[in-house]
Length: 169
Image 1 (tube, rainbow, N blue to C red):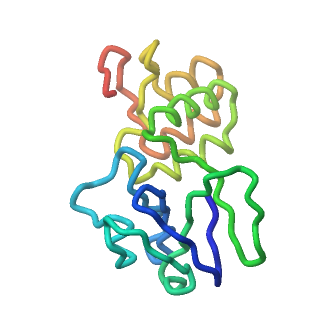
Image 2 (cartoon, one colour):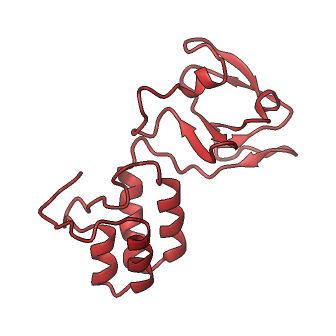
């Protein structure tokens, strides 16, 4: 996903957009699977018609948003002034919950911190349970002796009393 500065992008009705709201410090999208129906869509925030192809220049929104456009190819050349946002947006957060659990087991505090920060607005992400074992990130950190991660998760509000049988997914 790339953000253009000073050049327009053609945006079809199926092309994905991500906004970074500079005021709120949040990434906003319409496709990650946990959006709030009461929250405006990305296209409505940009005053774009929902069902029409539009030409969008991120310069028009630079005071409030960084606009990231889906790149349909990995071979896209970044022009001067463009920003790159690694494609981290699968159709739902289940994929990244698996990444989160794997990184906890590996003792990768940096990646765990980034994922928790990225999903701080998604209730339950920090306590998401492995689909096979039912373990949460906190369970996995303790089981694999990753005490800095366990401490970080507790500081971020992970539920200490959640048991494997109390599936939240």
